[in-house]
Length: 436
Figure 1 (cartoon, rainbow, N blue to C red):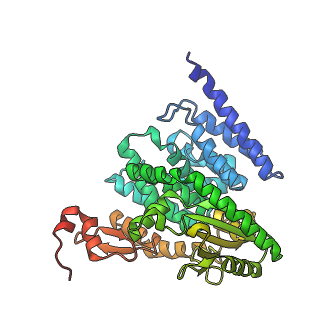
Figure 2: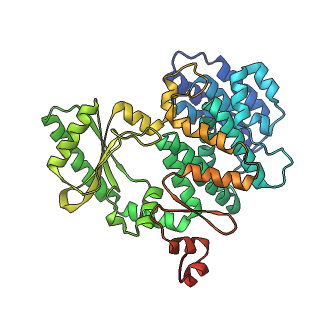
Figure 3: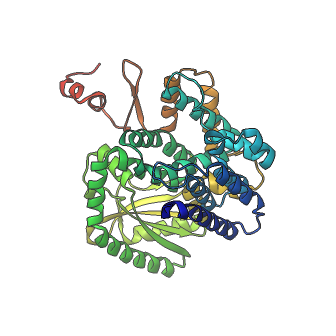
């Protein structure tokens, strides 16, 4: 017997121990009996299954549950994470889940279970119906989509083991469906990682080149940001503004999109480097903005007040870009602790403080769009039409053009007819002479 086979059960048990330790840390008052029960059932159901990489399949639901635990989600959500593939991929029935773990867990597991066993005409139809099912379930219990996002995130982290065609298909679906859903729910952290991972597989050469260029300047940029942090902390302290200052570099996919959209070089991306000031009140957010503008010259047109006018996903922050030392531009984001928590975690953060609530609630603006979307699309039976209109609803800041055959082409907001022609095919772009 190989070492790998012997080590596999120990590997799974070790990861569960780490999960349990994390849950005890972030949710110390929870009774973990149900969590252990879900783990034992899932481990038994998946015991003879392996992933394409060769590792025990049970490692996947455990990693999904770990992601949810890091988000500090409740036990129902964690149990769903452990059990989310049992109905789809093993002999466990939904009725058994309901009997052993209750209606909430059963509803969530059912919501994330794909409809792959339906005898539909095509993979496109199965995808459309599975996404529709998830959206409908998400309206009544937001935990459905949180589990699905955690599931997709771990699948993207381990995508390298799959054949190239499946890598591209899954990455494309992630970029078109799951990253935008995370964005609309205000979950910036998960959205950013999903986009970067998808970028690596869809445009590997562009991704590698951009990351090399960013990495070549990393040391220089880190020194620059540290100097800025020291200066900002000193200036804020002298004005009596309580704050902590963080630094960050813009994510690769976001940089790539900006370079393509604005047709500029990396040195012209004003928000490539950024400081984040996190303070205690809205009043001090504006006071900190004054300190920044008093120290460095702001770039015209780059001041954005998302506190007074939040984004549709309830993101709030002040943004400004300024010219710093050595004529280098950088961005400053200013927000309160609560705004920062919501910007990183979105609706997941909101859920943590609404224990026992089964759904997002009518008052939550982040899912108002979803309720409307589900109502509008209830009657769309054609899978192609459903997926196309869903993508339109998920990209409110983009421009959409339709080909004569009805295919939706997604373009930047300031795109021209020439961009549309090239998006169809390079030959169309090369021979385009007029528009009407």
